[in-house]
Length: 134
Image (tube, rainbow, N blue to C red):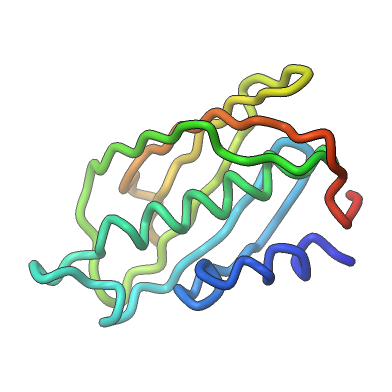
């Protein structure tokens, strides 16, 4: 199984429209093309859509070492609005990896490279292998 096949099983992210673009050791990159269904009542990108984009990117980076990993806590800070027609990109970078935990920072930018949000998360690594290798 490839990493893309594994992460395609994340039905919520897939149905939201999140596309995994890259995965490497401690790294992930994904994108989301913002459509009308991603907007809130104020006609801006709904925060949950941005969170889902960041969360899948986190999962790619955290699971890249071969151990099944789950988020312990996550924090998102919204910095700039986005809307229909924008393409958002999330890049996850590993900042710490321990025996059973890890810490990641994710930047979410738009197609112009402008910072939209930042996302930080710590993960717990289970004693279980993922069904793919890099």
